[in-house]
Amino acid sequence: MWSIAPWWTVANVILAVIQGLLPLAQLYLMKLIVDEVTAGVSAADKSQALSRTFWLIAIAAVVGLVTVLARSAAQLVGEAQGQVVTDHISDLIHAKSIAVDLEYYENSRYYDVLHRAQQEAPYRPTRIVNDLVMVGQSLVSLIAVAGLLIGLHWSLGLIVIAAAVPGAYVKIRYSGVIFSWQRRSTVADRRSWYYHILLTDGSKAKELRLLAIGEILREWFRGLRHRLRRERFRLIGLRSLADGVTGVVASLAVFGTFAFIARQAIRGAISLGSMVMYYQAFQTALTSLQQTLTGLAGLYEDNLFLSYYHEFMALEPTVIDPPRPRPVPRPLRTGVVFEGVSFGYPDSDRVALHDIDLEIKPGEVAALVGQNGSGKTTLVKLLCRLYDPQQGRVTLDGVDLREMSVAELRRSMSVVFQDYSQYYLTARENIWVGDVALDLHDEAIVAAARASGADEVIDSLAHGYDTILGKLFDEGEELSVGEWQKVAVARSFLRDADIMVFDEPTSALDPLAEWNVFERIRERARGRAVLLISHRFSTVRNADRIHIVDQGHIVESGTHTELMRLDGRYARMYEVQARAYGI
Image (cartoon, rainbow, N blue to C red; front, side, top):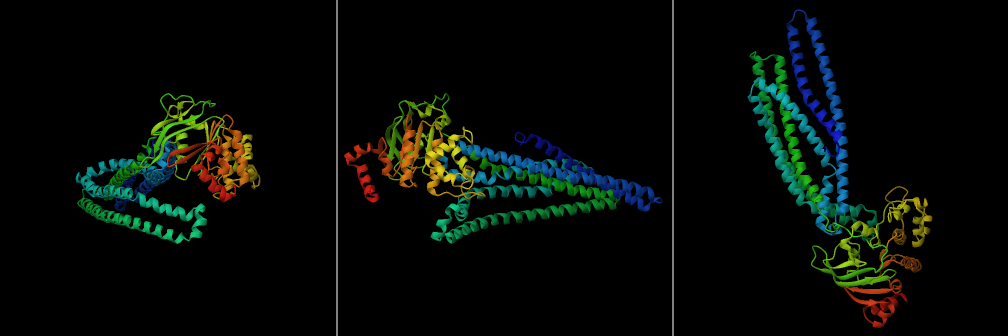
């Protein structure tokens, strides 16, 4: 709290102390008023008693006004500090999400951890602020009032503790129970929200209606939420029952103590004003102790749930920079080389790549061809150092990628993945994110759009390059799949990269647009290493070298002519597609 919002913390502490002491002043003023009124009833000259009573009431009114203002200020300060802390925690989660390796995003257990962290982070910090303030304020009141009560009889302190502790125990006990239940329920809760996303996400709307599966998803969502609600309600019901029992104990203690104080007043041991003061003091002490213990129980609960946040923040990347990174070779001289590379994804027994040897020279367009799941995209992930190989190495000009800075290495690459991102930003921003080192209005953005064919699409939009793409925000305009693909290719063209990777970059384009894009790729290949993945042989056949990938192995390599002459797997695949498309 102190490191994130020090001045708000100082303000909170000051207000907590003020609010903690004000009840004692109110109690004492009430005693004086009652005693003055009692004396005035039997006094011969009532004017003096009336005057003193009015002055005491005026002072009490000022204290009441200060109490109201302090409470309002505390709410404002608490809300401000809570928001600052919440936003800061969210920022830390975002930073960690960027820093962790890609493998976490391809592991369901990571999503459980992330889901729990995201679920708790938005409101737990604010609750911590509120609980800390409540504990501090209640402790000040408790210490102040406790001295007053002990002056009447030492046993009153013990009665306060005996009345308040059971309720705090119940809260702590059930905090742990609910925490354990929520952890067990993470998968079911996450699955229910997945159904919610399917039902409400616009990208699923067409298929949802055509397949008529909306009602099935609704039923699945309702079933999961009903189960989770029933389980939680049972736990909350047990806690409420226990709270009720402890509340009865506290009530008996309050009225039993009231009887003792009344007895003391009747016997003449204390005045009527003192009776009112001690009774209210006991109630204040009990409330303060209950709030203190409840705040501590809340902090205990928050600590349990913030373990989700700490669990997430404890994730460490394995793809890291070496102690002394070597510079990334720029420009490339000998190119990219895979030497005996093998790799298998974590938590999977299947080996994705087996002993891969591959070379991509500067100025060369190398193509990868193979069935889905053959290992082509995995090879790209290793080249981008999203993963490190388990055997062998990948080098640039003979330098192992693991000896270079990860950020510097990736700055030297430009990649279009098959599942490229569609950013609901302006058209200009969608391309600019390809190289954020450039000015947002750099002419290179329009040049990249022209090269990919996206320029014609963007010029036809209502606000040109300032048009928001997608329908998520007001005045946004949706693009077709092929048009989005042109924007993604333009994003890739924008970056001055020595290594360019295109994973199915033209799958949604018509033949003419595809030919134009490939010609631009050819032009940009001068001095650069280009890796192209495609199922379209009309594109692949023009590559300088073609590699056939099958079940993690490179089984054939050569030019189109050499592979056709070989009459192997590539030739058969080409002939099948040629017959289908009349090539």
